[in-house]
Image (cartoon, rainbow over all chains, first blue to last red; front, top):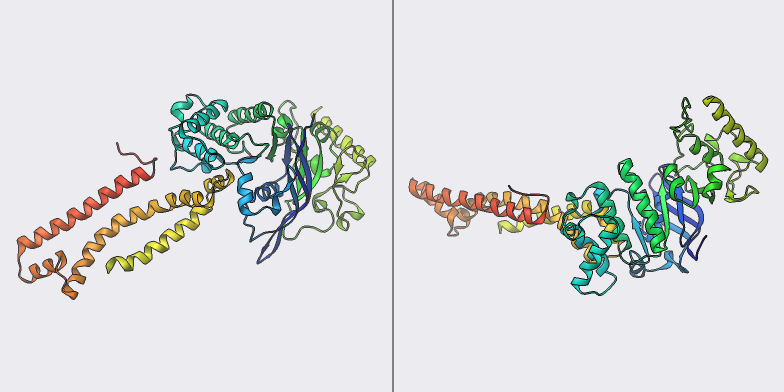
Length: 341
Length: 127
């Protein structure tokens, strides 16, 4: 199923020193993304999802951040590239779709010209061919009348169309990997489904890798093949989608799954995860989730669990034994279905 | 002379606007698609300059009023000096004439600003 290795993040740390202390936005994160795969990254706000990817693209202020580790993209460490070399990778082999399509297009430039600019900064082409290419891409992402829409300004586009235009812009150079940072958060639910479908179709048509960052587990369940659950700048659980959804191993994943509303099951209560995400300046010692974890025991506040395979079939970062994990998850599941009955 | 003191304010204003615009999402988009820094600055400058154009239109009026005092003090021949002389002589037709010219200049400047503004920001239309 998985193709060549596109991106490998190894022990990435991104720390921002501030007057109040060091913000550990990403603290020891590792994962791999392959061609032809949608890799979902889920986690609450402030768990380091976006920072990870902005770091990979070099879009964070390098002077304000302390970055260590490796981000290998097609064999090259993006963290070691100079600003100029990185610019040549950005938008060409590795591109990004952002969260808010209303704010991400420049209001003063025509949509078509903004996409044309993306083409011209990596390739020499005459104007007519550039325009033809832009129209072709607008058509490919499902914008009606691409010829006349080329000349429109962003405010004449709807939210969904703007996101489609952003996707077109990300795809003009047939990149190997597209990072979509919460691409559907700002959109209506119906448009969300269309955009997800579009991203999924493009992944297949262009045979690329996609990193889908979201806090919506439903989105991940729909389109991702692999999932990483992030908590406080670290990976909590990493595995194939079906495994993470059906046999989750980390108590935080349990909490996330239980907090999804289930429309087909009447009378269930939503179970929130108690407490709030920790401050990234004072990350709890040991397992960062232990203050909110109902199953914490002795080593949890002392030893930091690493994200490794602990016998559960895929890597997770929890000290509980694999038997306990299975038992506790089954108990939680049956408790939930009892409420329904 | 008058323009020099104002230039300082404009520099500050452009600088402030630029810093603000740098944080906008569309500037991040411009970087993400791999634009060279020069083009990114061009994007930012275009947004940063629009409020400056508006300010300039208003300032033209103040510049006209200020010219009266400067020209009178330094004895520079010009509309300002003419107005002062006319007032001292109670020369009403000249006072009216110069006022008319000054007001016309201010209105014309504002009109030009409005037109420039529309060409800068496509969201602004006059119907």
